[in-house]
Amino acid sequence: MAWTVTIGPQYLGWVAGWIYYGADPTHPDTAALVDPVTQRVVLRLGHWRMLTSPTGRVLLTAAAGTNETMLGLLADGPRIEVLGAVTAVLQDGCDVGDGSLACLTINDQLLILDYKL
Image (cartoon, rainbow, N blue to C red; front, side, top):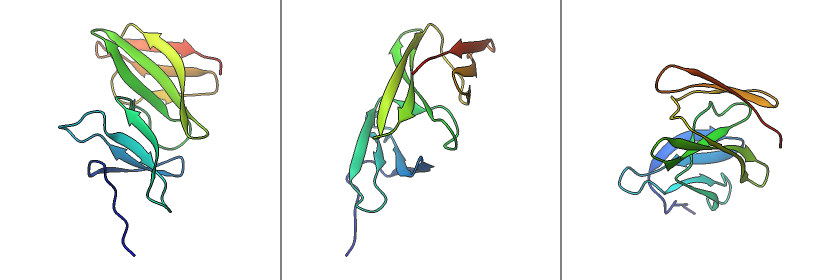
């Protein structure tokens, strides 16, 4: 039996036990997490994109306006636990700790945020 995935072919690796498919460049809202056994989409990420390494806590971002970024953490389920918005555009790669995260903005400014789930 062969399995196929009906979303864009942008395989980007594994995230928290799920197969991570990034968005197709022509359809930016097609990113998804896929069950590795059934090959079914378990979470459509829409415009959310991964900003941290797939090991440990996974930080996701989504543009919320011209100069605003929504932040969220991948939670069990899977689902996105929305942390809120920041008035900054972030570079790739943030460090996520228990209750805090540190990111660089595109202006090379360090942004340190505390959060509660």
